[in-house]
Image (cartoon, rainbow, N blue to C red; front, top):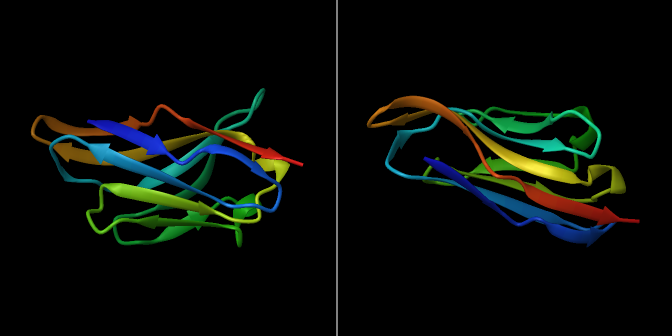
Length: 119
């Protein structure tokens, strides 16, 4: 199982980006999926999370600006980021919990995608 992220890049403050993450492999189901970020010199933090039932939670710093959603296939998660601020600059990581496969259940992380917001 691999999580493949895309959509990062350089954007000016006030702009928007959309991150995508697909869990590839033979997967029967995925429970919660989410996005975390890690800025230089800081710990990794939760940005947004969505359960298999569609329940969401967000970091206070992104509420009202970011929206997390899942694709119809349920193995895909998106993060729509609007009104970006320089403080949002970080490497963004996709996470998937309780991925059920032929060989068992596991959690997984993506390789990370860099988001840079210029002032």
